[in-house]
Amino acid sequence: MHDSVDYTKLAQDIRAWGRELGFAEIGISGIVLQEAEEKLLDWLGKGYHGDMDYMAAHGSKRTRPAELVPGVVSVITVRLPYWPGRAAPAQGVLNDPALAYVSRYALGRDYHKVLRDRLQKLATRIEAAVGAFAYRVFTDSAPVMEVALASQTKLGWRGKHTLLLNREAGSYFFLGEIYVALPLPADEASSAHCGTCGACIDACPTHAFVGPYILDARRCISYLTIEHKGSIPAELRPLMGNRIYGCDDCQLACPWNREAPPGTLADFDPRHGLDAASLIELFAWDEDTFLKRMEGSAIRRIGHERWLRNIAVALGNAPASPGIIAALDARRQHPSELVREHVAWALARHRM
Image (cartoon, rainbow, N blue to C red):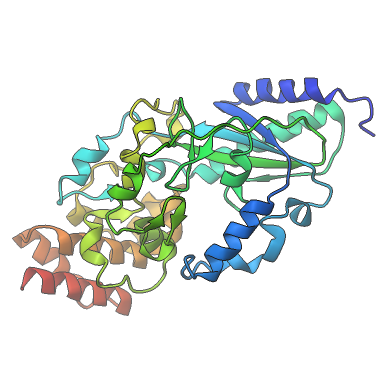
């Protein structure tokens, strides 16, 4: 059906159409992920995924794209910068224990929505050019080894912090994919440029890196504040500082991010002052306020209970003040046992 298609030209067109849709860059790869599969199985076997059971639930579909989307032979990966240039300086917020630190990718609109809309438009454009074909778009929404796939393209290489790194853009960008049943010419893979640097590993507040390229998610602040549903291990709480949703420390320490350009989409600009909000103010939000203000945000999916859990830990790490004690006292009888436990811990920290 597509015998007459010039796939080399089509790949060039796809890159041009992607730029028109706001993507910074497009990479194209094949679907062989044997090395990544071996590493994933080893990582899972060591329990580094914590209670992210979905990492193992899909079996080999994660590392064998054709099992997820029958007929797929190529993967189109897009890169979309997100760093919010209008946000308060990240390090300044981290240095002020009265403020809440929210990972910079989550300050604005939910990236899933922003990426998915544009990826679908790109897929529709391809379909208009070549006719119907099997495809599926992904935005961190299914078992996809996005960094392993992207590192087979010109988009970049896997950094020691496990994220994709790009010489011009660092790691402050989202990735999205389109699995396609079209034999597109694949990129040559980028060379790696981390060298002997270990700044990202040294910067981790909770020492979550077992070694270069290996993250024990059970110690990672992003995992603890977003993915983990239960009680945060008591020994890790003091190390979390004021980070209430995600953590950027490994990226902030990376030399490749020093000159990384900010994103250009207004979608990722901070909402509701979350780039430098007061912990006390955020802790006072009731569930209705949380749900309303987090509408359209990636943060909403953790729910109000975990939101309070995370902020209670940050309040426990802040210097004691009458305002902080009063805020914690107001939540001592919260209906959630999870919230009560973390509030009690925070209050005990201030009364030691």
